[in-house]
Structures are given as C-alpha cells and as structure tokens.
Image 1: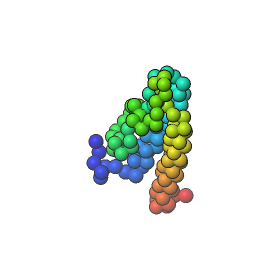
Image 2 (image 1 turned 120 degrees about the horizontal axis):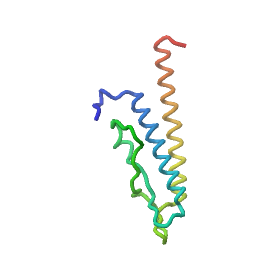
Image 3 (image 1 turned 90 degrees about the vertical axis):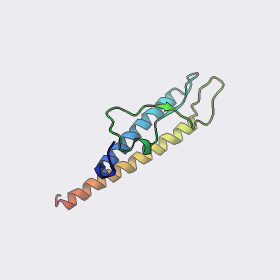
Image 4 (image 1 turned 45 degrees about the horizontal axis):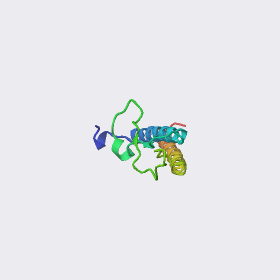
Length: 114
C-alpha cells in the first residue's frame, strides 16, 4: 500500500474512475439478473477501502448488504435501487473525468504549453 505522500492527484483520479467503471459494470450485471431466481445483488468495496491499493484487475463483486428487499424467489435486485446507483455512478464518473481534465489543463498552463 502507498503512503499518502506517494499518492498523486492523477493516481487518485485514475483509481476513482476505474472504481466507478467497475461499480457500473457490477450494477449492469445486477440489472441483467433482476429476473434470475436466487440472484443476490452485488456491489464492490467502497472507494475509501480501495484507495491507494494497486490493482491490475477489476474490483471484485461482493454481496450487496444494502439491498432494499428480497423477492419470494430469492432475488435481491431492486431495479429502482440499481437505477439510482447507475445514475449516481455515471454522475460521479463525469465529475472525476472533469477534475482529471482540469488537472491536465493546469499542468499544461503551468508548463507554458498550449
């Protein structure tokens, strides 16, 4: 694990965007399995837990402990909950992308580039 002094803005922004992409992938899988009997909704570890970890593979999905309900067939996917999560994740990804782009612009300006 990296120390705080080893973590740059760009590393954190990049990790955040990867985490958000992984979360969106897991949310899409939940939605795709919303009619699968016995399927348990999945999520990934909170970003605060993965911050600073070096990862070469997508985040692992785990059972979603925040599922709103379980249907009689054992499926714990609630489409409304997953739709909200997908929209929040997309918005957070847009923000992280904008911050990353602004960081590049600042470095370009500071370096005298155009």
